[in-house]
Length: 144
Image (cartoon, rainbow, N blue to C red; front, side, top):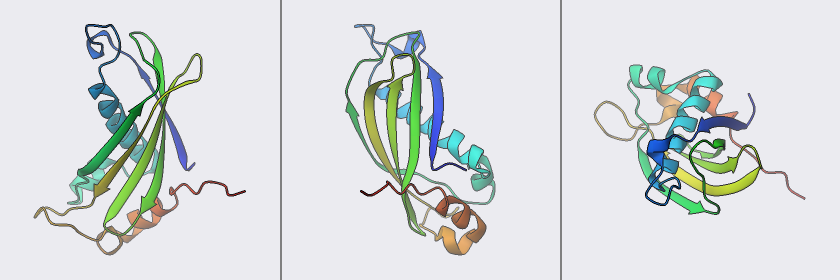
């Protein structure tokens, strides 16, 4: 599995605002779509995680907008796991116009693993095979 996952999303009309550009909140939705698709592609999706008693709530999100997206465009979202500990996971996202390859935004999200009781759990202890699988996804930028 690659450490960078590419997810495509066609911008829908309802995602635009009065200025006919994508409303900023929709980038957050695309992050979730891409993150869940990446987990599924990696071999252990969010549905299985929940069935096994683990949820992955969002602790924080940061999003920077660079260029506008509009109705009908295809947004390519690049997703990377940037950090993984037994209890937390961080991801980065890049949003591109797939036709022009224009960078339209960047974002990060931080998450934790919680059990059915709503308290943090160690994924490494609770689901060690999943922790090992996700550990292989951690992106390590090339150093010069």
